[in-house]
Length: 91
Picture 1 (tube, rainbow, N blue to C red):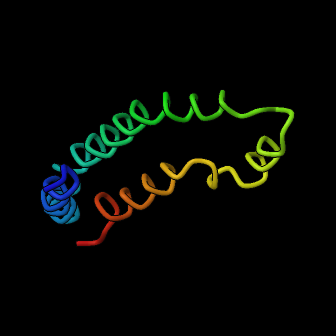
Picture 2 (picture 1 turned 180 degrees about the horizontal axis):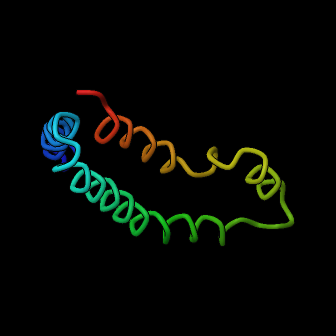
């Protein structure tokens, strides 16, 4: 089982309980969301930097990067999908 698969039910339960008790659990849920984004940022920054540095400014791929940024970074779509599935899914 993936980490997301293990964490998803726990976060779902935390989100359910945070809706019922926002004063007690809202801060914890916010911390979980912040930790998720911090971990993802640390994992993605070096990969994205490497891809950007690998672009040849004399070729059209740089123009395409500006025009359609996510097309060059499939990880961005994966992160968005993972966020929606794990952290933002209604329970």
